[in-house]
Length: 275
Image 1: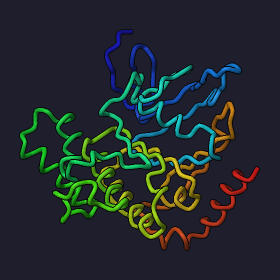
Image 2: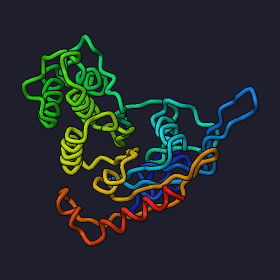
Image 3: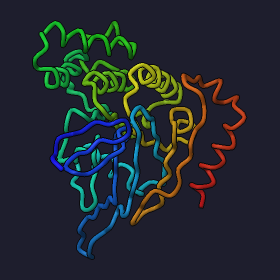
Image 4: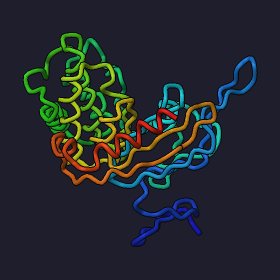
């Protein structure tokens, strides 16, 4: 069988391997090992996870269980020790525009404006677009995150919450296949955190980009996700449990809190974390 992608109703093939056509992200037998003076430290082992197209998955687990390590491997920022990661059947070899990342710290260029920071990625991903088209893309996503009056403000002039809004706009603006979020609201106060959760899910409802988000917040995990993936404690962490969240979309915070299954889901996650 040749390496040409063959689309069918249910499967496509890449390099002779069949993949269900609705699987966006596939982690198989994933392993991460760090050498230490006392021998190898195995952070992740036998980790298997499939994430579907247009799915929003949140990942929870105790500190040190390898959540961020896994996300950085998906992003191509951390080498894989064993197993493989594929995006639509294509093995991850390093960073790429098919994966957008929103970090806990926005990591903006401090001397650049909000608009210039978003344009950094847009210019690289859409080199054949006109300058005006690229600017329109950047301005559109800055508008979506509520920064209409701050296009030309330097990153250093923006509050932490506003900087994270720029980070969200930057990630969506490059139109990735997969959006990776590493506790993006973890350093924010609860009010700002709630506002940005609402902004994130509003844009996601429109764009429907496959999303994988790490969080320590059980309520955030339930509110945003189609599935919550629970990781076992390290070393040799793997997937311990998966909880399907059967709330209709689009959803509001009020409807989630009032849903008869909300506290059942919450108890399930807390019980897992406490054992």
